[in-house]
Length: 152
Image 1 (spheres, rainbow, N blue to C red):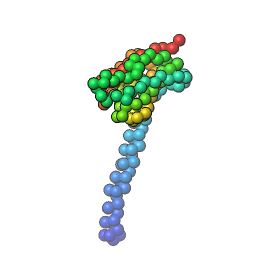
Image 2: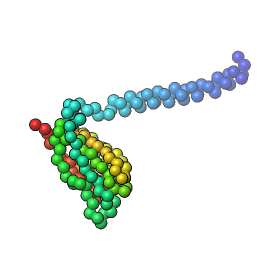
Image 3: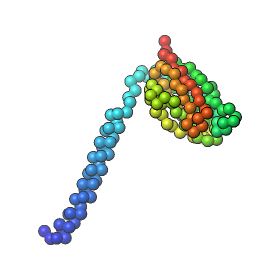
Image 4: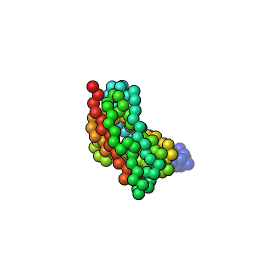
């Protein structure tokens, strides 16, 4: 073989190795993420209750002196009945509802979803009994509680 062919081949090998390595890393990462995500093992009635409860983020949420609060500030829901809670953001700024306890049951404390201003919504289905305190990390004076009880 000529020196030109050897030179071209030696340039292709690292490129091919980098592509193969990238594909292997992407597949491995996907497998790790897929096997470590929590899986819901609850009945359909708990994951898809017939009713939901709505909490309003008020229009004055970004003004601390206006004493804004979630409405209602505290709710009680029942598993399999109305355990999906929907937050509606009527504020003129985005909000992010987060659990105060990162170790809250059902991973509620790990949620970090942004709710768009002016009518954006976000829903969470509670699957375990407990008391869930939450707040907006954008406007931390907004605080609320969801109490989840077991259905009969």
